[in-house]
Length: 344
Image (cartoon, rainbow, N blue to C red; front, side, top):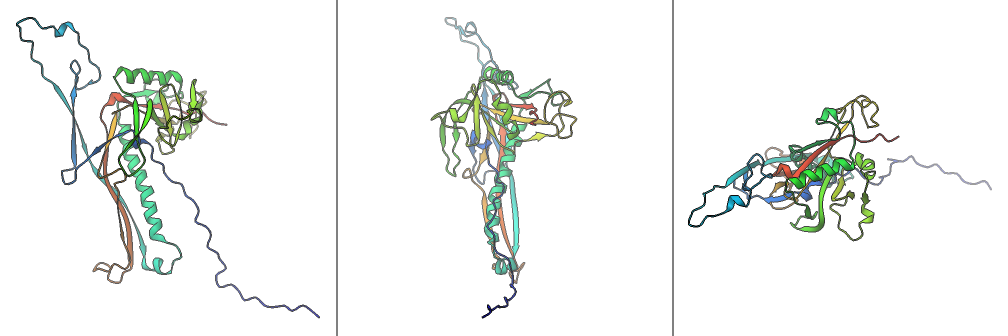
């Protein structure tokens, strides 16, 4: 008896829903080392910070001061000279940032994916990056600069070295900078965690190989029970710790001639210049409203009918926040520009 055969009807769709693939997610790194200045609502957009300049210093150089004990001797029966204190004000104006996504009623009713949920997730990741860029922009404005080669960006022809890190240490310590001993926890609740005394350095992930070659480098795996400054910390050299992110700026083809340097160059002519931000205690801060994650999210669903959308065709997901970053003491942090080695 012959085997029966059957016709198979054609598939109506012929497609399966695959898994939702992972995507790149920004990791905020710099905000943990900045002081958080809580701002009041309904009190204006400009915040004025005030500090007293130490005796013997000036407003233009508040970290360098000198005096003598002899200048403070008091003669019997004689009123000493009357001095005045010098005040230094630093102003910061908060700005509003945000993003908006939109979808249609058709997407909600006929689509198989939860588009609004994805939009809300994207808003959190996207605005987290925007906030990080606000803070990085503030750090870039620091006037205490170092260069791996020469004295300007145009002369950068070297990478990070122990000598360069020692120069930064000498400069910060000479400016009476304090080590960072605690960092903000990555939670929506204000709080901190203890850290051994260190200066924290933020730079690009491309610099990893050169940092690991610096004499005396110690990987985080050798820290033992010591707390890391950030989960993206890779290690330290002396009193410096390094935290890396691919979102830290680099300036393509901006340094010296790349010939003979062994450094990375996108255009094969000039050195690509990278930036590193070295932060001491109280060197910089940012203004926050209500909390570290003070981003206001709103979802207007498609079924919210009004005169601008009488048939409920459109839905929106948005997120906004107010913030500003500022360097509060230019001598208590540093910006270093350098190149990275070509890896072949």
